[in-house]
Amino acid sequence: MYFHDLTEAQVLALAISAEEEDGHIYRDFAEALRKDFPVTADLFVRMSKEESGHRSRLISLYQKRFGEHIPLIRRQDVKGFVTRRPFWFMHTVRPDKAREEAASMELEARRFYEVAAQRTNDASMRKLLGDLAQEEQQHASSASQITQEKMADGGLMEESNAQRRLFVLRFIQPGLAGLMDGSVSTLAPIFAAAFATSNTLETLKVGLAASVGAGISMGFAEALSDDGKLSGRGSPWLRGVICGIMTTLGGLGHTVPFFLRDFHAALTIAIAVVIIELGAISCIRWKYMDTPFLAAAFQVVVGGLLVFFVGWFVGAS
Image (tube, one colour):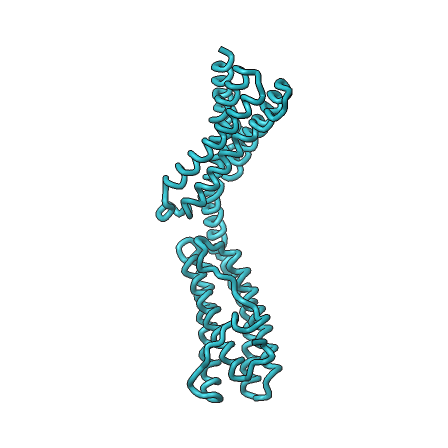
């Protein structure tokens, strides 16, 4: 059915179920954020209680006008009515994204109450729906005010730092480990094959095998190393996929040039790519791992050169 086909009783029933759903979503946000982001979790607990208050007022009005039985009418039952995105399946919820989603939810709820209020001639119902529309608008302002207060006392700054740490643990760290392994460990077999055969096709085959094999190995090793429950590193399989992909890409970077038939051109480009890869690893370690750039560059370059010379020595002997 369409919204304009609903009776006044059905509009109230829809409003009640919508408030129940929004309150549940806010409680889900609070539960998902409580461990790492308690300040934002408290905000969603407060918002959930406010939604519960709206629901109680709507039920009281419904009972006075239409009796005790409230039909179950949900958002998805009304064509063209906005539906909420399912957050229950997500393993992690970022506090900034949760706050953005809440602001959108409040705006949608305000619009619903404004339209619903215009469709009724009953004074008590029109007043309640109009009041709720104003309160939904005030919620966004209240959330913004609470956010500013928490920023002033340092609460959200601590959450921001915690969010950055989790981002590093769940994405940067496995990706960096994979990139380092793929970029460095594959140097020896690829360049050993290059110097031994002086054949781009044979070197390409070795590079592809080494890169994909290392990606699979590193991906499973990362996924099986830690379930993430105690360390807070998130889904093990997501980390495994990230690590495996970055490992493969790290090896393919200096493998792809050997698609060229000119051996010397391919070798020159591959060496240049290795330099770029080592520089990128150094920058990532400097930006996200709090490692001084020169120290990061020295460690990565020395390790890369040692592996490269092993490959050169084996291939040339």
